[in-house]
Length: 109
Length: 115
Image (cartoon, rainbow over all chains, first blue to last red; front, side, top):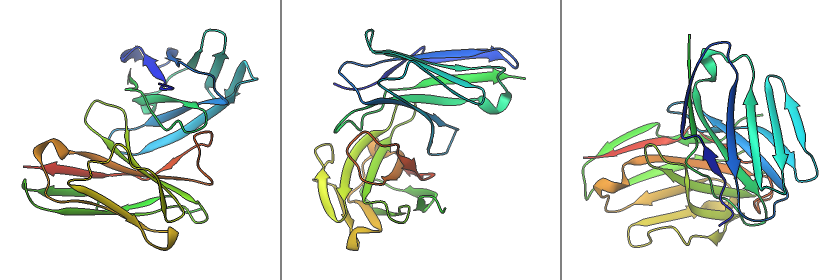
């Protein structure tokens, strides 16, 4: 399976703290995508990192990719209550449309 | 740019009844996807259309689920008859070309409760 699997399943932090979640996948990829899902809503694309990139930033988001370990991490700095959501990764490769179970992040004010 | 539109937002039916969901993808997006998301799980792909042709429907329970994409634009997903285990959020997504490398754009979903 080319599925991305997120870890941990759940994460609870205080506002202002950093949140780190990880993703592992099994086969070669062209890119790795991260999505956010607020409760009762659809998934929203956050960031895409290509297989030849090691790190990418977007606002308070920092994504790293280690293709040798087939893993990626998503760091949200200075978290806010509005960051409370589920986060999913998806391995970007031909024909792969599979999502994992996600990491449920809870940011307490 | 308008996003992916889905309706209805919520639907409550009794088992053995039928239900239909509608999706309008982003204009110009060739590929449309229907996902089923059961509470606490990730989205599961049901069917993928490229224009008005089916690319992958291997996970679609064809004895009760059907989907079509008229003229390669709007799509409807139907369940007949519904079972209790069909209670889930049904998400529609679209992408420019398809294939797995692109980012997907999702609608807000239809939350189905089967009683």
